[in-house]
Amino acid sequence: MNRKIIFTIIFMLFFVISSDVKIFADAESQALIDESKTVLEDAIKKLQDETKQLLNEYDSLQSEISRLKKEISDEEQLTLTKTDEIKAVEEEIKKLKEKPTKYKVIKGDCLWVIAKMEKIYGDPYKWKKIYWANRDKIKNPDLIYPDQIFDIPRGIIGAGPRPTEYEVVQGDCLWKIAGLDKIYGDPYQWPRLYKANKDQIKDPKLIYPYQIFDIPR
Image 1 (cartoon, rainbow, N blue to C red):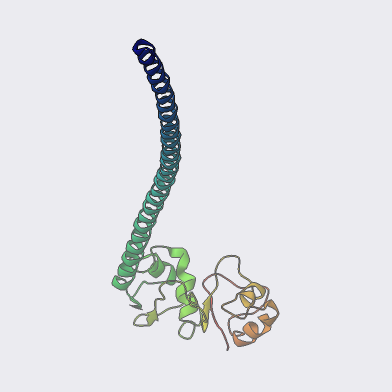
Image 2 (cartoon, helix red, strand yellow):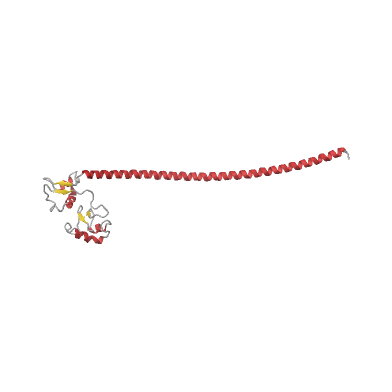
C-alpha cells in the first residue's frame, strides 16, 4: 500500500478519535458543572431559609424582651406605689402612736372641745366617738367632770376579720352590719346585735355614727 495512503488513513483515524474524546470530555464537564450548580443552589436556598428562621426567632426574642421590660417597669412602678403606700401607713401608725389613747378631763372641757383638740381627733364632730367608747362613764354627753379619764379610740373599731366590737359608720343600719362577712354574713341576724346593745339602741331603726356595738359570737 502506498505510504501516503496509509499516513492519510492514520491521520483520519486519529482525528476521528480525538473528536470523540473531546465531545465526551465536554459532556462530562457540563454534567459536573450542572450537578455543582444544583448543589450550590440547594445550599443557598437552605441558607436563606435558615437565615429567615433566625430572623423570625430574633424578632420573637426582641418582642419577648420588650414585653419583659414592660413587665419589669410595671412591677417597679407597682413596687414604688406599694412602698409609698406602706410609708404612708407607717407614718399614720406613727402619728397614732404619738397621739394619746387616754384623756383626763379638766375644768371647762366638753366632748366637743376634747374631740376638736389636734392631739385627739382635730374634728369636734367626732365627739360621739368618745361618748360611745366611754358610755360606762358618761351618763349624759352634756355632763362630764374634771379628773374623769376617757378612752380615746384610734382607727376604726371592728376593722379586723372577726371583731368583737364594731364602730358604726355613716350609712350603717343593723341589717347592713349583720350582713357583713366579718360580722355574721347574714342580715337576718340583726336582732342579735340589737339584743346585745339594747343599752344604747333605743330604736333598732335608728343608730348613729361612732356608736360602738358589741358583737356576740
